[in-house]
Length: 353
Image (cartoon, rainbow, N blue to C red; front, top):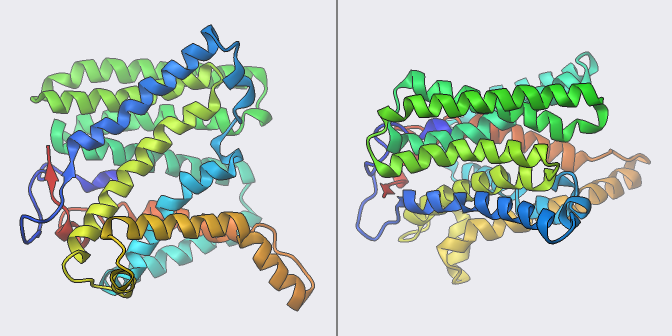
């Protein structure tokens, strides 16, 4: 789900035919931000009572936990892909865009990797990742705080730029010297101060209490990530935006699929699920988590076994880097337009406070 998705018409139902349909609750989405005070309390308790046990024992990045990748990150990317390809009308509708983007990805990250420095590609993907995550969250709230475009994009770009420096500081810290790391902290801290000041100045445009809550929740999302980064709780710093982002996306996916398939399954996946008496709510999460587990845990070894048997060679990280990397980039791209006002997806989405 992308942040370009929610416009000023966000509170209106799209094409949902009856009162038995689900709606996306802004109150539920706002509740996801409870992870922020929870992680801050964990950090404080760790310093006060646990002698830094969490800081010393948590990995420097959630990606170092296979379990974390199976729960966060990969499943919602897989779910997005399943939602797209399992509904043939969506696949046909966006076919040209998908083909062109696939060519672009192969060119940029396949051929381009032979000429473009690794760090340049890494920072490019990092910037796209941070933009995708924060654009989603600010865009979802936009339906409530209804900010003018210039205010929305001011807050967005301050958030994205600060988030990008924090991302680089966490994931490239081993290749940075002390001065570079301090520079990153200074720049990201300054951007966070600018974000606070901008939010205070622009809050007057928000007319509802729920809108103000969403606005400041998104500001705190960035600030808490920066604070946890500075305190060297890297795992928690990544966990905060990752959980909020992934859970928000799944809420949209499940609501969409329930509204589309609960009365009459529209594709083979849901027809098979109906024969197995599986509730519509769990079909997409179950399939995406199971597929993410298989791909993350066994994908590379399975491909290597096949290529070793037939060709006497191994392909390093063919699944976890190649396939899942491709799906992630396609996810960032497609989510920017598949949930926009007027898209086929939005026919099955309604909103409630």
